[in-house]
Length: 259
Ligand code: SAH
Image 1: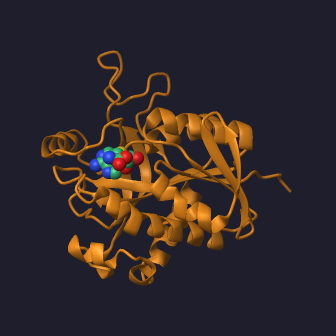
Image 2 (image 1 turned 90 degrees about the horizontal axis):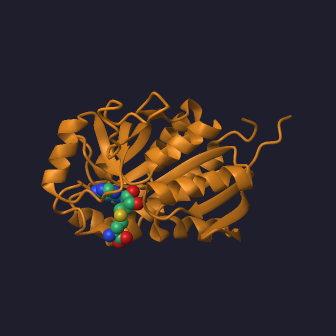
């Protein structure tokens, strides 16, 4: 039997990860300026870590997870701005493919292509992706009960019964997309993009380098427009954090231990 390492859970922001860390009651280890929380949870060895915001912070964190902790797979859980037509606040996007929307080495290479990789898109791992989609869908029925944010959801016009789990392209860049102009520019350049965030594609690239399975789930916190920052903090705390924690728990509960 192969000696498999822990499953890594990564989030960019404290609010996104704190619920999870409390629930798993892990032991902390500090490497560099990151704190890695280790626990045995639902029969799996798990290591959870706050990466910080942006592509560099996320990439160094994941490289440490792989090299220092020998993780066998990486799950990213966080929030994102919705870009796709039907992608509304409160929905969930599970990334099938990821791309860095601010990467441009043209005219030497086509726009978005990462030089020497010969690709712009990094694909999430099939099995982990499917398990994450299943976990996200399995959590939907209990969602309104599980969250204290019902009131906020209501005030945002979100009906817990209408939440959709999307699968597709997620784009990452070192920018918080928070104006109509930025939003329209991104949609024009990358019409297939469902959501914008600031870490996923860099995590996918590191996992590609090390051949470590990777999947990512994002709760839509905003529409990446002029209103993006209005309810941001409250949304994360009341809605995205508990929901993200439920999805990850459901993933770990249903994920086979021998894969
Ligand atoms: N003002 C915030 C900044 C957070 S940056 C703060 O209080 O710290 C936004 C974080 O959420 C990033 O980790 C990113 O991945 C995600 N995100 C959510 N909506 C986003 C958007 N519209 N554009 C880019 N990233 C977004």
